[in-house]
Length: 371
Ligand code: GDP
Image (tube, rainbow, N blue to C red; front, side):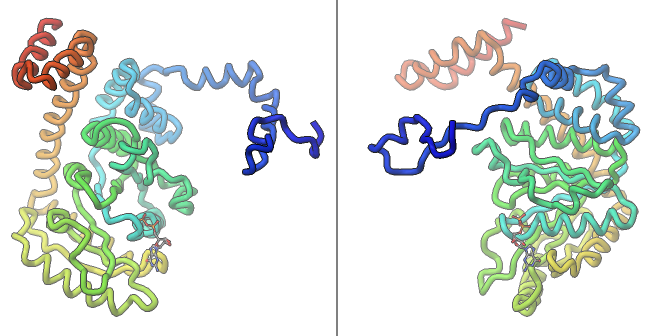
């Protein structure tokens, strides 16, 4: 077709006065070539457990990524393989500092993580950045998974960035992130950042899998304590007032004093750590090393007083219960007998023919009979 010729598409009809629709670009032969198809299929072939485990222990990022993909998969075969890999990696995990980083969208989380991340890798550290993104549940697209974020860190050989797993309940997403932490640690990443958007429940999930909780905030005019729920502030081990640069420096200093007063009204922490408030400019990379120093101080204090290990133990038992609940729920709702019956009972509840408790009882009994 010549360039001038109009493509015969319904919207090129005179009834439609919008954009002109052009014909699509033909697919190059090579994309559909048998060898490419064979290659694509081959890359989906599952490897033996030991191949993944050895690869991960040797710091092979490609195999680490493949194992994380298995962790995130809903396929039962993939899940079984993932569990076997995790079990074998578990003895090599744990040797890291896990930092949760939260703050409302736009506060500068990615810019901050990039600045702090580069500071860490320059000192010889290895950093994995993972995310828990509640929005991905709704939109099926992760805002924390945007590829254009953290460009410099993405190119750093000592950094591994993995966007939030995008399917399932918050509990499911959190479990996958927790399992990914284990794999990353086994691959030699001794710094783990878990990023989340500071607007919902996911902070509690992040708090339950990290050692240190960092909250990024902005200096506002008079409404410094707005926007972030009190409970999230109470969890913070450090609040960084970001964007402390240009005209904002003075306001950031004022906010620092106010937050400092506010957080000292909270009950003392079990960790014996006195939470800190600092200012930073993620863009100018100022205040970054001071924040890292505080994280190091926290680590030293809590390793000495035993809190670090105690918290990790407590988290491990918490995650055992979470995993059981998640597994039971999945088992139940995936049961074909339940799937067939549940709609009918839902209808009966809506029509007031059956109470919710009776329906739940019937379904649970039906499910246990399958076992
Ligand atoms: P996120 O949504 O929390 O991940 O925030 P981003 O890191 O994407 O940053 C949001 C916007 O704020 C971007 O335009 C950044 O360039 C800008 N930004 C981030 N940190 C700073 C900072 O320290 N100072 C200033 N002036 N701008 C910043």
